[in-house]
Image (cartoon, rainbow, N blue to C red):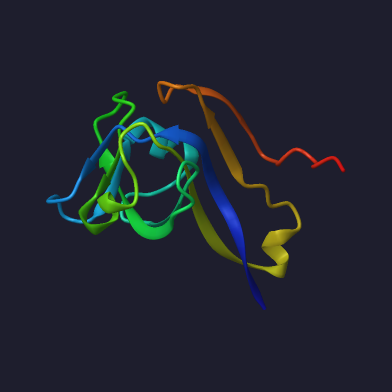
Amino acid sequence: MNINMLKAKLHRARVTNSELDYEGSCAIDGKILDFSGIREYEQIHIYNVNNGQRFTTYAIRAEDGSGIFSINGAAARLACPGDLIIVCAFASLDEKELKNYKPTLVYFDGNNKITHSSHSVPVQAA
């Protein structure tokens, strides 16, 4: 049996551009893609913290070190520059792979610079 697991999470990145007339996708700084393990053309889920919109697209590579998070095509109607987003990628793992599996979680400051990373979500207190 395979189980869909969180592979990578980019937590609270800031949208830098929304390009309605660009071919659909989400352009992400190439260094951030490399650091997180998200591959170009990989399916990603985007959750807009500002307006609650949730949508699926795919990642494309933006210029390394640019800090770009550009929401393109029809999805540009769902996120505006300045909005905070969470980007997630998932992987299908079998029981054997699950034993030592940990996702990559990446956290950002207000300028899309990585502040830290982790491999587990903090326990939520009551």
